[in-house]
Image (cartoon, rainbow, N blue to C red; front, top):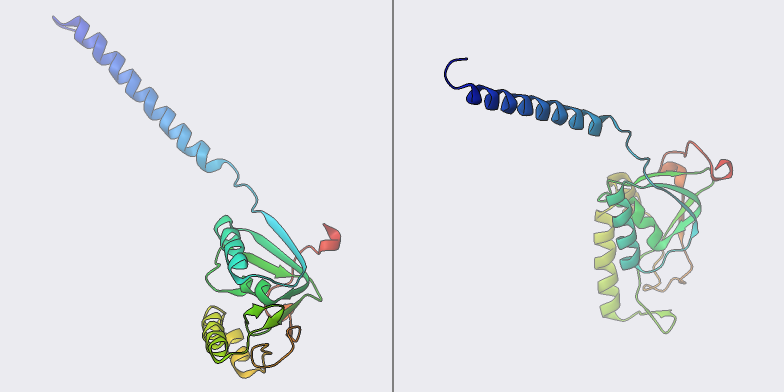
Length: 179
């Protein structure tokens, strides 16, 4: 060991500490990657008539960010259909047999009735066009050609275009009755 034994002792301790830290680092990395991922949250939506577009957007954005799985049962109408927007890539949605999506063009309510002014008609058309751009291309093309009810243009507020969810979403592997 020569003339500096304390140097070699200190060097040995340092080398041992380094080796121990490397072993611990490797263990921590492998342990972190071997732990099972928690199951994504599951949300059941049953007979949702819609509501505020802004509220539904925030809700679906949060579901998308959380990687939520959504199971549809019954009716999903109006703002509820925003779940189909292509930007919500984190949502995994499915539908039970008999689930239905119901569409209408947006409108601005005032005193329980749809506004039908020229300005309201222009704004509704702009909003509908931007809404369509957020949908998957096949659904967008279908809705562009279909007669989609519009309260702003004179249809009753409860008039809807109904589409079976089975043509828009995969079937849920477990039905709500089995859960």
